[in-house]
Length: 291
Image 1 (spheres, rainbow, N blue to C red):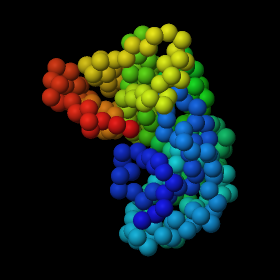
Image 2: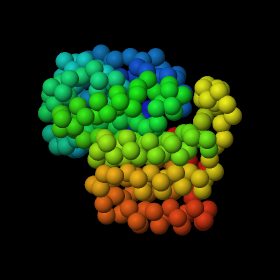
Image 3: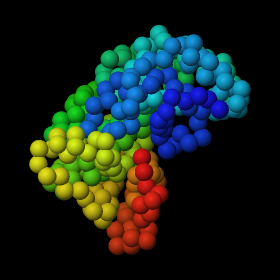
Image 4: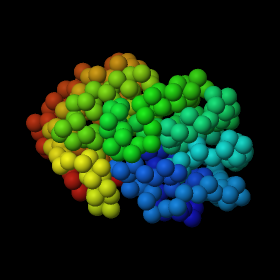
């Protein structure tokens, strides 16, 4: 067992991956909706410490095929320091097929296409990219630290480098007032990004960030009901115009788990959402929901 610096987070699809903490926390750590790393001071870990974790993990899981580089901002590591980590992973895990990490908008803005291509060739195959919303006004409210245009520029560079993208958005982020513009602009942004995967989380405002989150709106925030969240999901599924993108809502925060390729399963997904809207027994129980 590795000695992780807690708390530790990973995407749902990395449940069977070896997790290596290359960084601690998040270098931005100012998004008003996110409390994941508020208890941590951002740190790029020393190579020796990361190497020690890799070596220990290789002893414990020698046949591992997937590695996720945590915490929230591994791609901020300078390329010349990240490449030795990828090399060590290849050396210690002979069956390795995939290395992934979270990526923030400014990570992709700061790295060149050549750097990203070098990282991809060294084994960093896919990036989990938090879009949250495609609406310019909401991006300012939540203090995302990036504009819609920033995200388009950065993800284009990742595509040019041959990296796959898994983007995430947050249902309910605009409350009742901004619901339609949130989903309409988010669907159009994802369509322009052309990610391999698009995942939806559901807004969960935990107590330690509630004052900050609600305060930044400057007006009363009306949260969506479960049927309204499912309506947002349906609008997103209907309007994302990237046929081969796989859509998922399998995060623990979601009320109704979904998974399907839009070119094949769009109508089936919409039917499930329509049924779920009227049948609360299909919803994930509240005690099972979380971050």
